[in-house]
Length: 260
Image 1 (tube, rainbow, N blue to C red):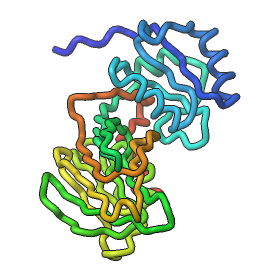
Image 2 (image 1 turned 30 degrees about the vertical axis):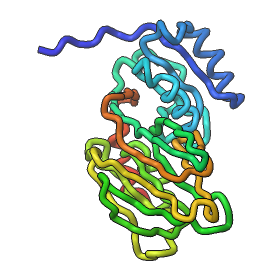
Image 3 (image 1 turned 90 degrees about the horizontal axis):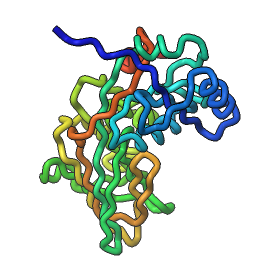
Image 4 (image 1 turned 180 degrees about the vertical axis):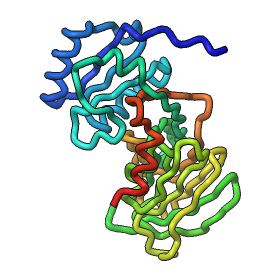
């Protein structure tokens, strides 16, 4: 028999710099109290999806649950904002566990950069010159040359973000796959990307890197002038997001596939 979790009482509120988020921070912390982040049972993020990613990155090591409320523009990863019954909503919330991508990128000067991405790792051309990428999966070359504006690897949680805008597939959270999606592919023009097992190790080699420089972006962290990039899912890192009952992240991802 599963022992129910004790009710959440200690909240830490974090807010973006938007005026409406700062106003919400003041009202909610006065109403529910403001705990130190390292003592809180749940962190409440007030802002938009970009701020939610920022908070998730900040809590990777603590693995503390994050409950977001939309005080931004998009808010796909956020719950609706309401000041009443917040503790009750959080205690009844549904949990989504997500795993980030691990990026290891080497730049033209030999420096190795490591970063985590919750949504996606994207490679983007830096100049007017088309990027040329060689793509390998688990050490085997699968595409010897892709001429494009770039390419990205997205998690299921990130599949509705930049990946969707690049015409990549929406992935259910429990599908255990990653999306490999080209960005404005020029040649081969008809290649639309691939769905990969979540255990896949994706490698990009930048062809003609001096003439056609490319940057690698893990969520919001950019590394310029990369020559090779390796991406894999880090299953040892788990992050928990909380969503109002009936409005789980799984439900939102499913509903997005039927939006017109």
